[in-house]
Length: 112
Image (cartoon, rainbow, N blue to C red; front, side, top):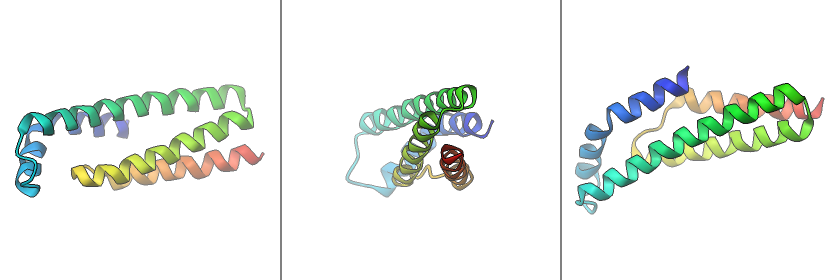
């Protein structure tokens, strides 16, 4: 639920975020470049969430350690993405910690 809300707020506030980025980084004055960057980031977030929940369902369904390893690696990718989103001024601390907990729990279940 939190990921869906994050993506919704990300998309709903995209115009204001683009304006903030234009003020913050004066070197990027082309609006369409920033719009493309934000749309790509939003698409990447939707793709990441779909992949994460698909891997989570697969790991829970099969209970294979290899699937839990894939899930933990995917959660690590999500944490790196969240750190990169800090440059877009879209860092979300609760979502970062949920991904971190998902990583830790998947690593734990991998060893069982």
